Amino acid sequence: MFLLTVSDSRGLSYYSEASIGRYLRLEPVALCAARAQLVAADLVAYRRPLYQVLSLSDSSPSSQRLGEAASVGDILRRALGAGGGQ
Image (tube, rainbow, N blue to C red):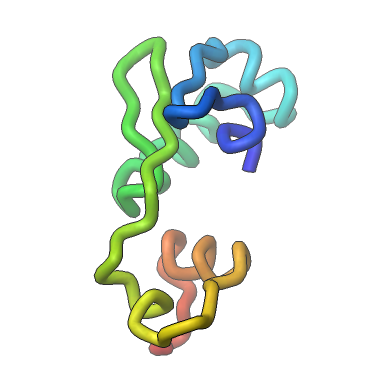
């Protein structure tokens, strides 16, 4: 959510690791782990010092239910592997 909030219209954010860690109260190791999970889930792209929030794929399970949007919680649970077999 932080990267969505601070990104520009193309999803780009130039916030430094130190700034992000300070705002989110994350140690560098925790920030690195969180970033790795977001990258693995194709939710963000990262090339130091630039983050880009990526659009959700049209092939995601939520998009196959016409007219229904996925909640942020559903998206995060899928991204973190806690979807519970949905």
